Image 1: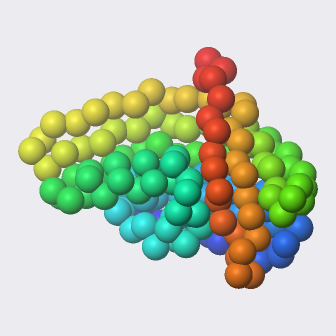
Image 2: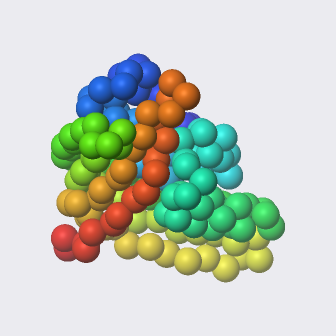
Length: 143
């Protein structure tokens, strides 16, 4: 799986830049599970972001013994944002994920159904001339 393309808009400290960075971050999700490449994920993740750390730990564990993921492509179908509010931006995305499988090196696997999250919310900050994901709140599934 190829990494998603990094949007030029995320190089700006604007609401549009925050939305572009949030969309890119969410699009990285299946890539880190498929590839184990966490460089971009880590660059965007704040140390205090529990969701970010959880994904990192799970992807690292999956790849530690030769496992990987298939599927799970992400479609961002809506976006809205605002800020800055005390230096933070809020972004809400509508996100659909395709069905995926995590394949372990021992041949076992776990399947995950397709999902729709109309209220995938991220708190973003502009730090050191780049975006950081400070926190993620995932709403209830729509389907």
